[in-house]
Picture 1 (cartoon, rainbow, N blue to C red):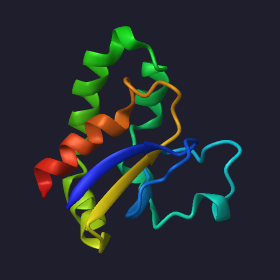
Picture 2 (picture 1 turned 90 degrees about the vertical axis):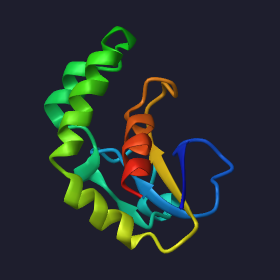
Picture 3 (picture 1 turned 180 degrees about the horizontal axis):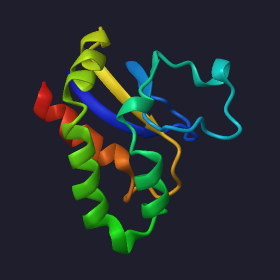
Picture 4 (picture 1 turned 180 degrees about the vertical axis):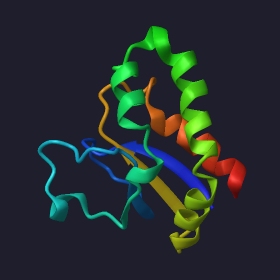
Length: 115
């Protein structure tokens, strides 16, 4: 399985299984428009962690460590989600403006270790 990340607001959505990995629904995107195969909000950062991070690049290293800790408690849930992917490509969709400091990068690495 090939895992890629893609901002839900960007065009040229790659082919594959499309999973939204944000806890909150992205503004301005209808459910029809999103055309999702799944909404994996259980694998998104907790509300407390998301609010603490607040997309501050200076907190990135600590955010990464804390988010990986949260994911380690959700390992079985992550495996269940991966079992649902019936295509060669898994596309993790996110809504953040900052493409570099986005939890989807961390989740991608985590899921690749589970495959």
